[in-house]
View (tube, rainbow, N blue to C red):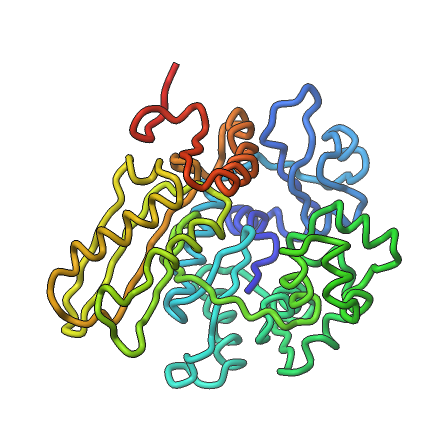
Length: 378
């Protein structure tokens, strides 16, 4: 689901005189020469682009209105979009501003056919908030995302037709494709999804990365079926459920190996960790990692999780469900609009991840984390 140009729709809903004219938001930074940040569709049609100096933009488009940015309003609108989607499905993920990926499989008994549900969602969002939206319906997340950005209000990609739908799409439209890979593919003559679809996986691994190649191949072919988190989860958080079939005794649950895989599969540093489990009687249990646990190496932390689980599962009952809830990010909360000085700290993440994998039995922490995992201030 995509609400095109959500910031401009919010501005037009407040001031009707802004409709049907080129609009742009002033850059939130404070350079010597004011420049444009976001430009709407009508502004781009007249030759305006983000980053253009404001004086040049005013000469290019005579009817241009330059607006002051209101990030807090945009963030509240994004949160309102997430609340709206929760009434239709529990699973989904908010992407860029005004864009969301939701799971509608399993809602047929409540709302009927999936295409009708998607159309009802679009109409209700327009009636409730006044937001015009587009939708894409597909089993493939990539196909659904690109279909939502089409001209039609609701584009449906039938099962089995994902590769044919994606084939003519240019590779620059692939979400989150690194610019260096775009340039590499362009030099090799690979400009569309269809050019990349027949490339064998070993060749694609040499062109990109052995770890990224399988996911990239699935996305360009329309074979990606991601398991979406709950819409109630905050950004930077993840919940990994594990239902044991059949239920097992506590000592038969290989929790340490599973937790170690989770801690190593994500390059970020854990900020909080909560372990929950339920026995066959439905009684809940929980354990929360302390600051000294979170600053421990992954090997040590995985063993502590296993020990805490066995210490808490004192009743001789079978365990039927385990849940590991993680929050990530260098031991600190992340704001929506970060201080530019924090960009240096964010660039430490890849280096820290490589060091943690190289020295799994050593605690690898950034230098600004003080004793107990708290921030040191100077």
